[in-house]
Amino acid sequence: MPVLKADFEACQGYGNCLTGAPDAYDIDDDGVVVLLKQEITDEERPRIEEAARSCPVSALTVEDS
Ligand code: SF4
Image (cartoon, rainbow, N blue to C red; front, side):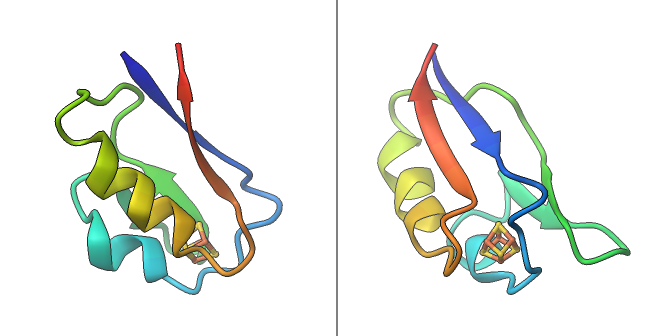
C-alpha cells in the first residue's frame, strides 16, 4: 500500500495539504503537519498525492511501500 511521509522540519504550517485531503493531513497546535494515517489505498492515492504536491515547501510525499 502507498505510504505517507512528511518532512516535519520543512513544514511551515501553510495548511494547503489539509484542503485537498483533510482525512490524511492535519496541523497540530505548533503549526506542524500531522499524518492522520500511515498507509492509504490505491483508490485514494491520486487525491492525496495531489494534496501533497500542493505543499509550497514540498514537505509531503507518497511512496510505494
Ligand atoms: S502544505 Fe506543507 S507546509 Fe503546509 S501544513 Fe501541509 S506539509 Fe506543512
